[in-house]
Amino acid sequence: MTEISAAMVKQLREKTGVGIMDCKEALSECDSDTDKAIDFLRKKGLATAQKRAGRGTSEGLIQAYIHTGGKIGVLVEINCETDFVAKNDDFKEFAKNMAMHIAATNPVGISPEEVPQTIIEREKDIYRAQAREIGKPEKMIDKIAEGKLNKFYKDSCLLLQPYVRDPSVSIQDVLNDLIVKIGENITIKRFSRLQIGEL
Image (cartoon, rainbow, N blue to C red; front, side, top):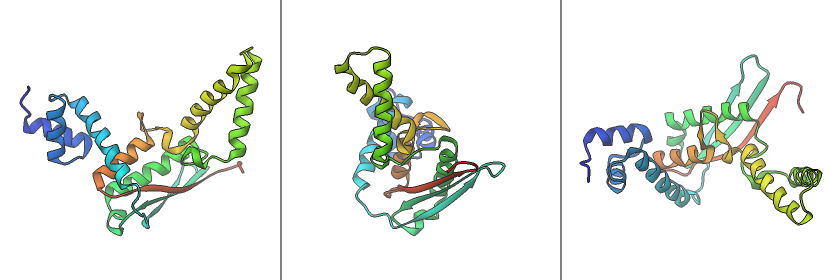
């Protein structure tokens, strides 16, 4: 097994923001492979994030972003457990990045559960019609519509969207990483996006 050097731990820590002992454990578990160690920490982070998900979030901040030229504006509310975290630079940076991401991608909701049923039904009707148009068998049509609906959620729901600054990760991944780094439950509560000429 490869020796785990202080430089390797430092490099992993810089990439992930995770504590020294966790970085050592990850490198040890992954035979000193940094990429595998990052995945290991992200999986562990997801478990940690899920453990914290039940905790109340009554503090936080509302972040505004106006796109160059004043044609698009976003307000997003990000909640955390304590006022101390709401003042944390990583937390504030996350809020700014979320406001810019929302300006760029125009999500319809935070999660699939938030998408209005009318939009879901309209999308399914379109997908069914498309499948019939290209001659797909009737028994396959609902399955095809469900598959396309899942893609719609990935494109349209904030937490499932690929992060504009790093499309290899989703917004949920970025949020989970922040929860692990900060050690508190953090939620994206709501957002509003305005664009000139759009209702």
